[in-house]
Amino acid sequence: MAEKSEVRWLLAIETSCDETSAAVLERGQIRSNIILSQDEIHAPYGGVVPELASRQHLKSIDYIVNESLERAGVKVQDIDLYAVTQGPGLIGSLLVGLTFAKGLAYYFKRPLIGVDHLEAHLEAAFVENPDIEFPALALLVSGGHTSLYFLDKPLTYRLLGKTRDDAAGECLDKIAKFLDLGYPGGPIIEKLARGGDSQRFHFSVPKMKKPGYDFSFSGLKTAALRVIRENGLKRDHLALADFLASFEEIVVRSLLEKVNQAIIEFQPVALILGGGVARNGRLRTGFSRLAAENNLPAYIPSARLCTDNAGMVGALAWKKYRWGEPLRLDLGLDAYPR
Ligand code: KG4
Ligand code: ZN
Image 1 (cartoon, rainbow, N blue to C red):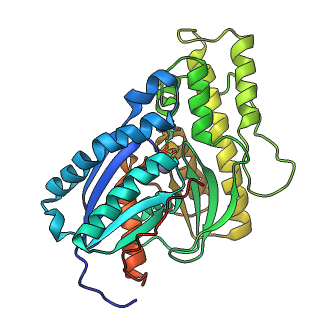
Image 2 (image 1 turned 180 degrees about the horizontal axis):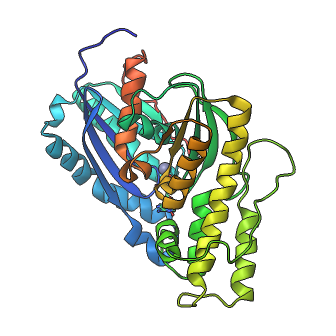
């Protein structure tokens, strides 16, 4: 990898879903990482409303980018390289960030690197642990995705399996919505499940028709809805904490079972966790325990780097640059929803 000293300041933008985020990196180190969540806007609907999300990005992007520059103590004209999430995500939301980044790069005549959102989530673990060993096994669990990857060297991602229906986060969000607990459901469920008996309600890990590493959460969701109806569970029901703890437990077990299977087959030397659901305490503990049982190190980003943020986007762009990605301003760079 050739040493390139000309890039000092990098500005990254992330608007793939409902967080408007901008980060400034100095020689690959995050100097600012501003995240504006739209949770309050989408909460009344129990999920992200795409049209509202893109409008809100439009309103906030200028302010968030300025804030990230200010916090890093750098002027926009000093930025040497731009990075932006191209996809996957909501097309209208992605286009706001992409167009904004293109505009800046074009005006200041600087190169622009497009980044994949899922790869950026996996990169989050490297921000705090740059020396993760390869091959590594990586579990990505977010609101839109649940996937397992095998990384045999930096910047290579072999998809072993993904969810065939709902993502794990989406499943938590939907159960919370059904119980009228609020949005986003994952952190609310985690809070309300605290102290609950995770063995009280019995769910089984979904069985896939085909062997392999694909996940499925829609069957679990249906089973949970049945339990809710049969037991008349609602917001202030005495058994709610037990139910939520049991449900959280089965979601975590379903995820970890596949990870365990892949450890046996692929013999990684490190485990990586990423995505918004990686903030969950039960998942973090279970993942670390599984790693320890296999004498493997587990790399789990701190909470702020788990959910959508431009810091991880900048970190990945920096790595791509360092590993030789040609620097240019491609105004044809397009957003991709999937
Ligand atoms: O990665 P992310 O910010 O956005 C996507 O790319 O999807 O993930 C958002 C997801 C939501 O489904 C949210 O409920 C879930 O992450 N989440 C959690 C927790 N915090 C966020 N799930 C479980 N426990 C949490 N503490
Ligand atoms: Zn995400």
